[in-house]
Length: 167
Picture 1 (cartoon, one colour):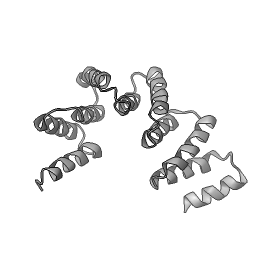
Picture 2 (tube, rainbow, N blue to C red):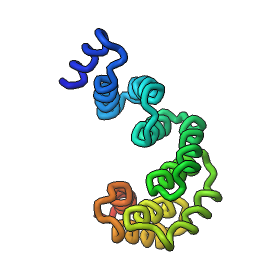
Picture 3 (tube, rainbow, N blue to C red):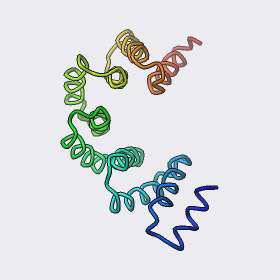
């Protein structure tokens, strides 16, 4: 595979950025988060761009390294406060760290002016905090209305109906 070939390249040339990227993507695909983390840290040391930062935040969240993810998300959001991607990462980290009040306030402030993709993300995140089934369903539906391709609310809706045995 490409991942195996990239690992062989790294034996010869451990500084090869393309091989590191391929190995990281391969590890993510296999859900081998620890290896993905190692490759990601190496890549961040060599090439700190927004794509690498977002990828590293996601890897950290999957490894439950919430404080590290939060540090990167804080910096990213501070540098690019108008970026939808930075807002998403920042909110994901707020939720993961248990700072739900701040996440809810930020979601409420961002929703009126958000793009369709960001709006979908925000409604989905808001659905995670709801107290009633009707509020949860309304947020999930609004999320999918804003972006029907968003897999997270689609899966959450599936899970909701599965638990209710409403097939």
